Image (cartoon, rainbow, N blue to C red; front, side, top):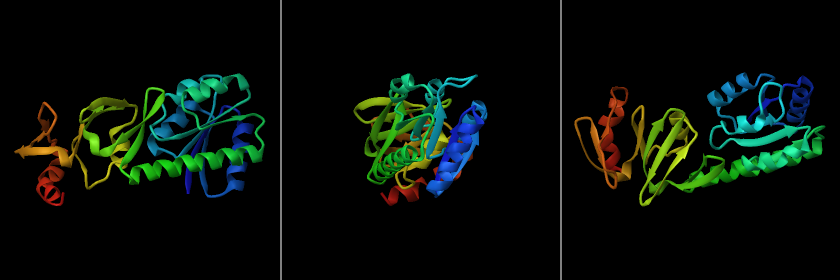
Length: 233
């Protein structure tokens, strides 16, 4: 089942997307005429695809797109063709010009499905794609030493490579990281098990990282299980 969210302040436009999703099949669609409510739903559910109108009374879709979680496949819907370039500048996978006809909708969905399948393949092969600014960056998981929370962003420290700052929550990135290689030991830190140098009490020391990482009380059980995890590496 493909999880989708549609945001458009025109009820007719939402009904058309709903009709096309039903016709396409295997889609769980949530529709919102309120951009604020729609963005809240996106942050909470992390859908596969977002249909987003650009020109709305209270919000601009291009600006909202910059707040989408990393990995979400974006399809813009608008009556204004001059916004197409803006759409692709925020890595939209496609641009549907209103009035939208089903064959064009179907083509966009097929393109989105290929994007989703590629992302899943990357993850299983040791890579993840993250949004950094307006661009997507492919990160090799073997290079990642530590993930640190920064409000609704994360800072990813990599061995001998620049850090990556991505607009994604710790909860979201935790779902992208394999359990056998990464462990969350603090509300603000996820560490890469292969980079553990030593640990004592409730502190972890990592290779190629200058400072010790504390373990939070909430994650004490995960911390205590480090010895078993390291033995399996």
